[in-house]
Length: 469
Image (cartoon, rainbow, N blue to C red; front, side, top):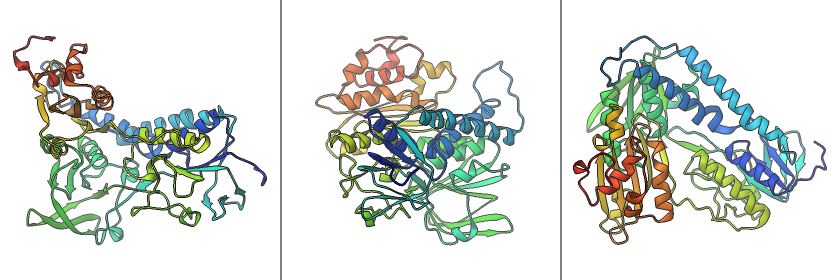
């Protein structure tokens, strides 16, 4: 790149938000500089969604060999080949990184990849590591986030695994402590447990997945315990030690001393935005208490030339939110602030088994504004779950009593994430209980459970025949 290279838009970060911003910029006719000093693809394809979900599915396949509800189907046991599982995961990551990032980048002539670290200057330029400065008309920051560990005494000295290093272990440990009972911690905890690791989960708050409906967290804990995981919620961890290759976590659980030991320790207590070393505040970009870039409803920072999108702006840190926000930030930066960053009807999925999927408000949140209509349908009343011999979980719906509009949906079920889109559209578009019950739902699908749950507001579904309206 020459020193006089001119760009309309500079995007700092080559993950999902960055690629979405760069592609949208190119579609709008802008000359775009995509600046990434690390590995293309960001968290999701490299160390997040893709590798974790393929490992989770591999662990599920191994688990199902001996755990299913079908008579006449032999249950065969055997140890997993972790090296082969990990190698297949790495192969998939490499393939998708190339197909979805490398090949996509080459297909857009308007995007120039600058593979360097960068900082912002007080004068509004982007300073690259080689001393070159780029002075674009607008800038979008999409530098993502990284695993963060709670400040537990002794933790740094003892060392620990995070979600990235846990998935790259050379061998499976005999035992594992997981600190953190939200999505990432639980997904990896169950994955390792199903591959034969003795797992203990420690969560500081009173229940697992604390951001979800309390009934979901309580039930999920029971199902994980049924699989052999040790679950301890409401734990106050005081220190971490390591002696002769063994981790010791000490603290207090229900007023009693806590002493948990394992070969490995995984800390999954959240993520923090990657804003250090970018000199953002010197460029007039304000940061929040966790290092997140603060923006207005158009994803514009206090510096009107600078926008931000994706995990770097803080929660919610979902790849589909990042991609949406990257597109929106680029449009607003190049075309004026026309589109607001609206997260109404945002679905969430935790890929445990049973999985957790939710959208909208919980019963408790709705109750703060009045007395909502609430119904819970156990999966034993959903034909698909009966046919699959897996009735773990339930579907819980929350509705407004006056308008009967759906306000929230909370699903605990195998493949719950595949059911939540209907409820997401209902919450976002203001659909009612009657809209859900009037819609056709294919028989023997888990999605039919949404209709059945909606019917329970007015009917006893145990008294209906199959497919009854």
